[in-house]
Amino acid sequence: MISLDGKVALVTGGSRGIGAAAVKMFARAGARVVFSYHRRRDAAAAVASDVQKIGGEAVAVRADLRRLADARRLIESAVQRFGRVDILVANAGIWNEEDIPIEKMSERDWDEMMATNLKSVFAAIRYAVPVMKRQGGGRIIPISSTAGQRGEAFHAHYAATKGAIISMVKGLSTELAPHNILVNCVAPGWVDTEMSLPVLRKPKLRRWVENQIPLGRVATAEEIAGPILFLASELATFMTGEIVNVNGGAVLVG
Image (cartoon, rainbow, N blue to C red; front, top):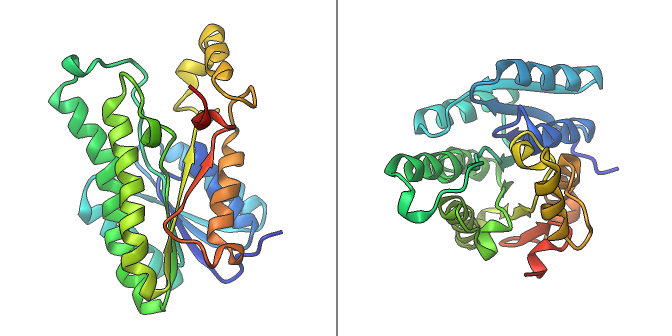
């Protein structure tokens, strides 16, 4: 079992899906966890309760990470509560269920996607890095997507944010390496979460999705959280600037 005893992890968007799975997995590994949520206080409370039941400690903080002031408050909350931030998982994000052809994409569609998926990652990293520099190191793990590597038709703004995250990881990894801050990202494909439920609950669409994946199924949230935990652990002390693909082989085909 990977141990994160003594570590403090911060997970954005930790109330549901991949974020919630990461919060619970980090807690089982011994980390104390702070996680953000935006609207779903009930879901955040359920995650914190699940962690408490396994003897862990997780604190939910409401934050709109499209606002730098909220990102700063989130990081400060973690430092005030636990004294440090060793691991940042920048996971908060959205995806548009309905196809949007580029000529019908509104300014609001574009701006909301950029703010939620990209500005939130910048904002969290912006305030976590000074803390990690003072500590002498840390881990930053943004969540990208297969869409950031091969694009996604009718979801061009989503793909653009995820591709930008990969470029950000490449740049920050060399910038922050002298400070012993390792920056890597995990790029999932389809995952069985609430965000993808509108597609996956339709049998015909689910079959179409699964046919694009060499392993023949979508991932569970826990199957994405595992590689995130690996990157946060002492097993990944010489990795930085990497994209860890967790997609059942989907990025390799068509």
